[in-house]
Structure formats: structure tokens, C-alpha cells
Image 1 (tube, rainbow, N blue to C red):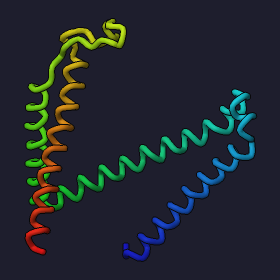
Image 2: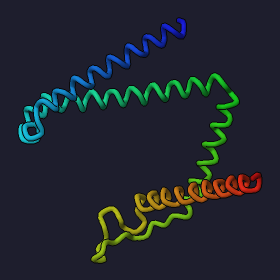
Image 3: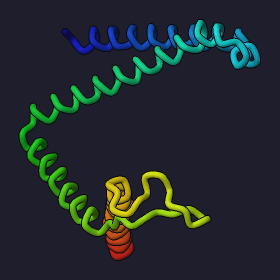
Image 4: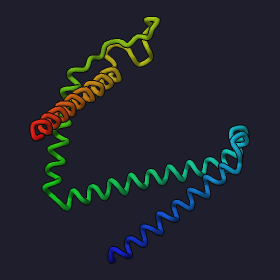
Length: 156
């Protein structure tokens, strides 16, 4: 297939998706806000198809994105190697963040233990690890930002 044919097919598909989305949205708008919020049958007839369409569209876009990304990686082994090295580095950073995190008890303002916040809870540990992971990545990003800013100032 030539690029022109592929472009026409993509344009047709995008136009069809947009028209279906517009049609479903207009149905919701014509029903009216009060009618949609008050009538459960109307919600099922008008809002549910729009939500289902949006959900399927999102799943489709995610699937196409993942497939095309993986195809691009496997076509270029050098990029695949860089990707695996990057993922391994992120994994090491997450292990460091996991060991920095604690699993202490979590209490509310009244001093009562929150549900799932007991001492030693896996949720506490993973949440703490996520917070530490974000802090570590933010610090690395800030470091390189300041480094790049310094290089720019020195060049000027």
C-alpha cells in the first residue's frame, strides 16, 4: 500500500469515529441535563452508549499504541537494548525507593488507625515506595535541569 492510500484510510476511520462520537454526544445534549440525571432508563439509553463507545475507543487506542511501540522496538534492536537498560535502571531505583519506604501505622486526625493502614501493611509499604520513587525521579530531573541551565549560562 502506498502512503497516500494509508493516509486516506486513516482519515476515513478518524472521520467515522468522530461522527459516531458527535452523534452520541448530541443525543445526550438533546435529552437535557435534568432528564438525564433524573431518569435511569434515559441514562441507559443515551449516556451508557457514549460511555461504552469512549471506553472501547480508549482500549483500542491503548492497544494500537502498545503494538506499534513494540513493533518499533523490535525493528531496531539498538532501541530495544536502550529500553531494557532504562527499565532496569528504573527497577533499581524502585528497589532503592522500596527499601527507603516504611510501613508504619497510618492514623487520622483523631489518632485512629485508618482502614488498611495497620503497621506492616503492604499498602503502606508500596505507597511509601511510590512516594520515594517520585522523589528520587524528581531529584534526578531537577539535577539534570540545573545542569542544563548551567551549561546554557556558560555558553552565553
